[in-house]
Image (cartoon, rainbow, N blue to C red; front, side):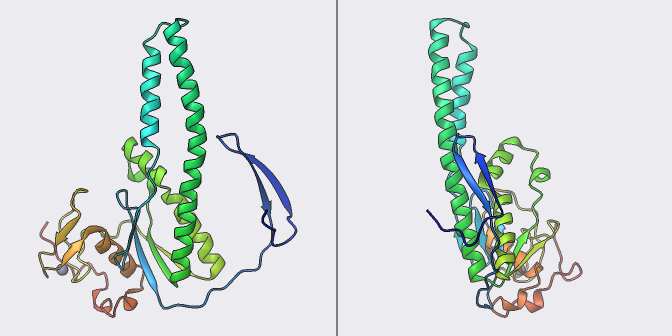
Length: 252
Ligand SMILES: [Zn+2]
């Protein structure tokens, strides 16, 4: 059992969907400081790749629940086709109940996997960077598509941001969130040229103005970092690429 850093001022018992019990303690802690660093990072969050950093690093997320939900839906549908009270009905019903219960337990486990992943990733990012820039994602408004919404909430973008905020405060790091109206995807991070809106399938593109070849997410992450005002740390090539509407042109 882990020792608490000080006497708790309160204790709460929490029961989760998988019927597991947790104790939550409120304790006072001294803020820790990390040694200052010159590193800064822009982060682009995505569905295929969970996070792409402005230095090109890509981080994949653990697989979500989709498959299991699909199976449960199929079983429920099969149940609705049977006559209530019949032998077949009872048989399927028992399977649904068993599967649901099993799924809830698994769900608990999967949730732990995701939370663990988000904790480790956010700690690493905060440890390694003085300034972290994220895009403000309006998750609920962004996607009217229910399928996409589920994928996004499974990924835990919101939770990830909360973790980053908490750790930035705890360790004295600078977390900046830029407006989601910045054209981070279609703007060339080398010359500022604004290309056409890119379809989600387009993962790589070439700038029509300067010929630079871009990985879609990495280019967006660099633009996020620049928009966060940390362009000077980007191998010294940021300064002249300040975002300005007059400085960029577009063919679209
Ligand atoms: Zn360009």
